[in-house]
Amino acid sequence: MSTHADGDTTLAALAHASALVAAFFGPLLFLLLADEDDTLVRENAKNALNFQIILFIATMIAAVLVLAFVGILLLPILGVIDVILVIIGTVKASNGEIYAYPLTPDIV
Picture: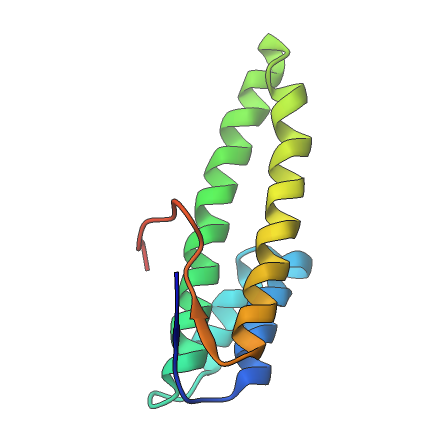
């Protein structure tokens, strides 16, 4: 899902892209540094942070499942899903859209 909003598209895109380098710390930093009236950056940073938290939980579950040899397959799949969805979010945010990751609840 995506909706259009006014704001700094560069910072909104970087809020998503920073997750590839700094996991949930990147989106958290952009959420804290965003202006109160910049809904584009704030909403994109919140959505990116929510997705990274869910991905972290899924990675921890997959790491435990490595003992049952199921996690060996899940860990690379989670990595590919992360990269693909973050790139999609970055492109959508650079176009001025608020990108909501699929199957991600609002935690923050």
